[in-house]
Length: 329
Ligand SMILES: NC(=[NH2+])NCCC[C@H](N)C(=O)O
Image 1 (tube, rainbow, N blue to C red):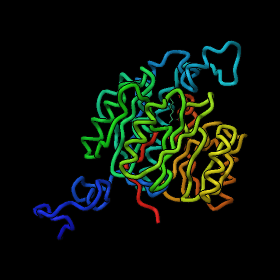
Image 2 (cartoon, rainbow, N blue to C red; image 1 turned 180 degrees about the vertical axis):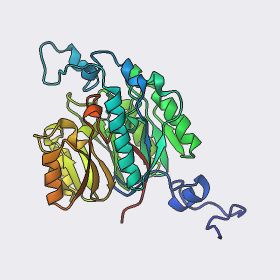
Image 3 (cartoon, rainbow, N blue to C red; image 1 turned 60 degrees about the vertical axis):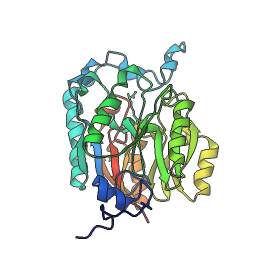
Image 4 (cartoon, helix red, strand yellow; image 1 turned 90 degrees about the horizontal axis):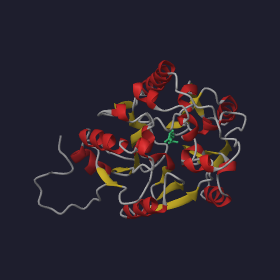
């Protein structure tokens, strides 16, 4: 088979780094993604182990929103009871999620290295920002997650995915607050976990590919954009309007993205689902009202049980980091 890129040629390289054919020919795969819904080829996950039991009693509460909320006196709507997760149930639900993905033909890449020091390594979404051509590694805002970046760097370089940058200095950015909206636009949610310095660094890296970065200020009740917003098809999104500013909804509307409410009767992390391909989602089995709405609009939803996972402050989206998505259109 003749390659379009003869390595012995002395001609100048014309394609950019993220050219899919060049990537596949040299780096083995068309790594990364320029969209949020194309068919997923492979995905990074971590099966939770004994490390989750290291979360102390109040972790469930602390981790579900900014730490700052703990300094506000009186009882707030976020305050939960906490307590350690049921490891057996957590593992069974995580295994269910993995098999649902494998059944859809997605290759699951396990996180390598000693995850036992990092109780929230299960939330692999947060490890990086996947962009065309590779990944930008996160820098975590909390000590309890800080070492996860090293595991990601190790795993992703071993499988041959280009590391296109990493948030450094005093910057913070976590993958759960980032999405590639389309070839020319990405979105990041600013919060306790994603600071202006992290956003500035990411914006510079994206500018190398002429990608604009929109910043959405998140309310104090959440830490990541994926608790408020999910793309479900090229031109369709699920939104929680109580957590998003008017200008952003208006901008989506201006871009002809059809919006669907996540039903307020469903658990709050229902929106934290995953597009396997355009209009086909892995969805929390507890989100019945929203599933009904989506099904009525021709969107295929595959339910999976994640109730124990959500007790740790994340859902399906948080547990999965797509490393390669097919191009759309
Ligand atoms: N992408 C996400 N929404 N991840 C949620 C992570 C939740 C986890 N308890 C944390 O505090 O980091």
